[in-house]
Length: 393
Image 1 (tube, rainbow, N blue to C red):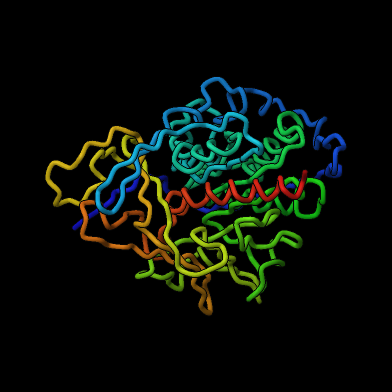
Image 2 (image 1 turned 90 degrees about the vertical axis):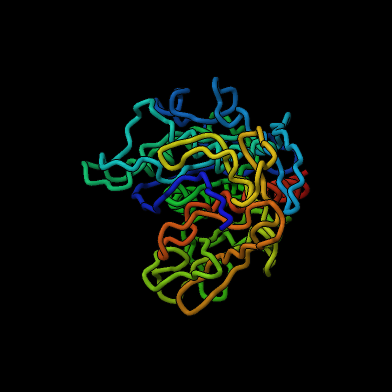
């Protein structure tokens, strides 16, 4: 059997509590930009030690050996050197999923950030070819959480980091939000508290990518529910909108007990926007997978690009591979769920033609929500940013 053992991080949507507020108004025309939260101070996020990626950060992990090799269905290999944007015109603010699997309650600021680094490199760092990356370290709720936990601490850290970013580094630039699972849940609440009802900050938001966590909308609608003013993104040139989905194999749709791809609110459904084609319909994805870095979640395997029955496959020396067209996706809705259906496109060539990522039927393909569509998400980010700038000369 052909297998692609995917190196990605398992994550769990864990909501947190917290309060947020903002003030100010957006800039327009040639007037100087408004700097939101210019007076916000934070002992935590003023320190380099609490950022994984940030402008001028020593040891920025979003700017470190992200070269990839494109692997086509016929086995053709093409080098894809990672070139960070030399003069990015927008920022990306990323919040990672649950990576601490222990029972301590809240993950401490302990300096042992192997899993956080692994995750940001896999899920978000590649966006640095288009934007300036910002990724804070936060005291997330750990997976089992049987220990003491400070209510609201994880979400409070995310709000603190976002405000400090806006006040000290944003300089009135447009930004995107990207998060997965627990991180996406925190960003959903941050949008509700800090962005949705505030015209100026909302105008700076190019889009929000809320992956592996539900954004609620009225059944058959694109806005309402979680957000009053921020609709679903339905085209690559739309901005101030949201992209959200939970992925499942086409051959294994969500069972009744799944927490993903559904809304618990009456009259609402989970938003699904297809990163392969925001306007809808089945279309191919470009996936990125890690080859060499190992973590507690995976073991390095440099041959995972190839079918198991291929003898002496070509050597790939880059730390990542891209697999365009291996998987296609479309949004599917039924009476309970609205989710991203993943179709694997088997072919007779030497490339691996199946993917891993299954945890259990109710989790679906949760752990690969970001990686399976990363190339598409980057392209969307570039197009949406261009559209935003076109509308804000």
